[in-house]
Image (cartoon, chains in turn blue, orange):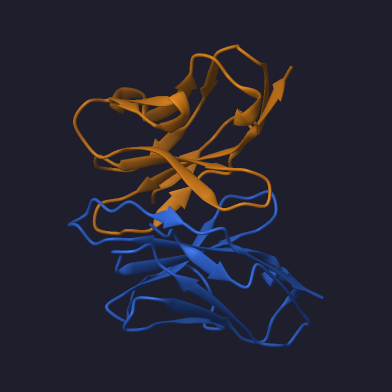
Length: 114
Length: 113
């Protein structure tokens, strides 16, 4: 049973560039959430996608956008990169079951902005 | 607003000793609570979760946690720590209608031989 996968594993960009990160959910899951984890911090919720729609959003600027495809995989796009966007980006998948959802995380994509 | 506090930034224990990691949450109703573990450079692995029912929850790798509503706590315990348990541990709360996880700042566990 394949778990959550993310690509790429590492990425280096320069300020002002744009980046796209990808996530494939655990088999049978229909919901994808994205989190940003800065060094030494806990993960911070960016947004969540369900049925190809943004279900809810955290306190992140519009430079952060996403998409969910019919096969439930998802992309996170960040425009106009800032140095402060350097972080580990984690994708988590879950299955909608009322309110009791358990999120399973992928290995993350480490982004470095120079 | 929901929040999670992990008072201990760093803990060192000897191999074979018992372990308790503290977690306090702030949430108006009954929360859904989780513990995740993160090894260096890795993603988060779910250790255990609490939705309802028995307040003592068993997880993987010999970990357990107890939900205490009166203390707004969900502390993680293990009776005998192994060197492979060295990692960072995160407590998280998910509140009702919102499905996002709110994480604490983590506790870094070091295990001495």
